[in-house]
Amino acid sequence: MSRGEAEVQKMGSQPVVNFAFADHAHPSFWVDLHTLHNGQQVKVDVVNHQEQFQLAVK
Image (cartoon, rainbow, N blue to C red):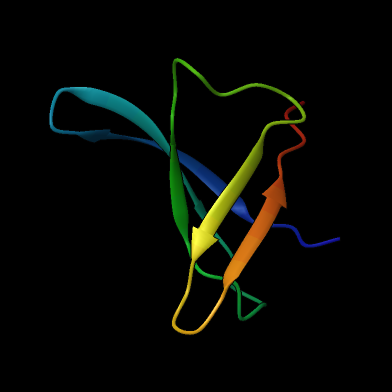
C-alpha cells in the first residue's frame, strides 16, 4: 500500500484534491472534489504505462 498526501486546491474555479507521493515513484494526480468517494479507482498515465490507484477516504 502506498500513502500520499492530499490537498484541496482550485483548478480554475473548480475545487480538486491533489494527491502527491513523496516517498514513491508514483505520479501525482488530481480528482474532482465533488466526485471523490471511498474506493474510487483512478487510472494515471505515466511515461510508458498506466498505473491504477484505489482511493481510501477516511
